[in-house]
Length: 403
Image 1 (cartoon, rainbow, N blue to C red):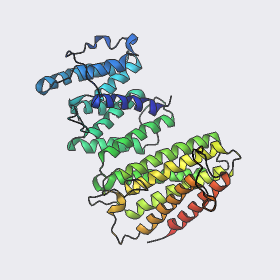
Image 2: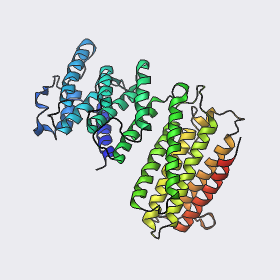
Image 3: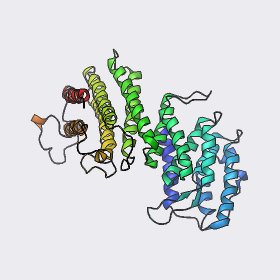
Image 4: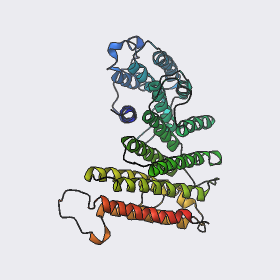
């Protein structure tokens, strides 16, 4: 099972339960002595759930603070004990990230995460000798703190940590080898944290770093496009991961708040989004032209292009293509006389046309589908390649325009 979906799935389950689940009625505290026993490894998620819900039920004030401190100490002891099974240590680290000073107050409200736990999570994540599975558990906890809210005096430190993860091409400072696809999971999770913080950063540093990352990934795609055989298994895997990571960075830009004045360069952001979209179209167009396969390949190409284009739209508008731009979006933040708006509108128009093509096929042969007809692509590889080529050519012109 893939690294990120497995652990994020568990994290989502725990978070959902704790924010809106049913509490156990008994009021007692957990005996952690059995938690290190390997025979309890499979039961750990349930043990964590019971501890977090039962121990802290209706507990407030000094009593809650005292129990939080004792629980944190016990969990740190378990998580850092090298003689304990990996899954137990990982679950203990997850539990640290789920500790709360106070639970959510009503529907839709967020809990207040335990600040002392954040210090532990950051320390574990930044230690070079922490095993990667433990670091990932710590990173999930850090991201949960960004969702719940990080205190202003901690925000710069957390931003620096997340940006270091996002912009690093490999896990630095470790002797333990880590597969590139696993490190990409770390980077995607760190992007979740940056998105939750909402801010573009002091002097726009978050937005600037993400744009640099998008440009780097676009360059990688351009290099793949220029290679002799884009369809090697290695290249397929690489460009799919590259598209996914760059697309999430683009979407994260759309989750930030551009309402306040910042030093964001409108031309730089426009250039980055146009370049990424064009690079994805070029690589996928070459993939379509170089293969005789049909349905399976079409599905993969359409998926990759949609992931990119929809993320770019969100990055620009903080909303979907069919809706109104978000009031705090980059697009809305631009002055009416901003020269780059015309280029952005060209980009959005091309994405809209591609989206319509994916849904309805080539314009001259479109017709309403029969009732209850099975969903299928209404075009072949050749037509798909032509649509991508047209989009690429239009974006090339927009890319070369000067202000």
